[in-house]
Image (cartoon, rainbow, N blue to C red; front, side, top):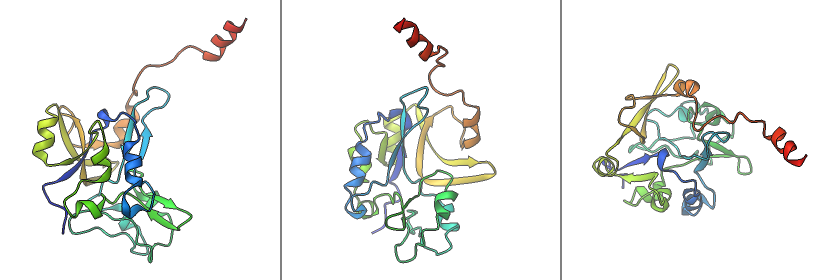
Length: 212
């Protein structure tokens, strides 16, 4: 049974509270053998406690599969990019280095690339991905376009991303403010002043004064 075409996975970084429920839930998925295929990253640890869940974006033209010399990474007809197939993966790390989103991870003990596969064992039978089913703030949401627009009237989903000269479209959508551009560019982050404020005081000097 294919994944329904009207159901999509949405990531809303602004709603992430860093609780790690998604990481734990993913590790309990039956097909992962106790391994979590999702990671929780801090956006800027020096300026903010804000976190963001990182999952596979399931690209329409997956770079990871294109650079795999063993043809171990497959994309299903319904647009889900699967983990590398154990019999074919040669643990070369090409996919790990090539993915613009930094998603694939090499399990060195198993000699196998493993990543989010949209809980294909669940979504292909009409269930939600494990992470979306346990996220308390709905930073990870699985549903229809109409549902997400009703829940997030101030945001809009984006599925086109620019990495230098490479334009990537994805099955997974990222929620951004409605006034944001129609696609997101990785280069914009280089000019972003960051979240929070600068800490100008020398904390070590201040601590030394307190001890005097």
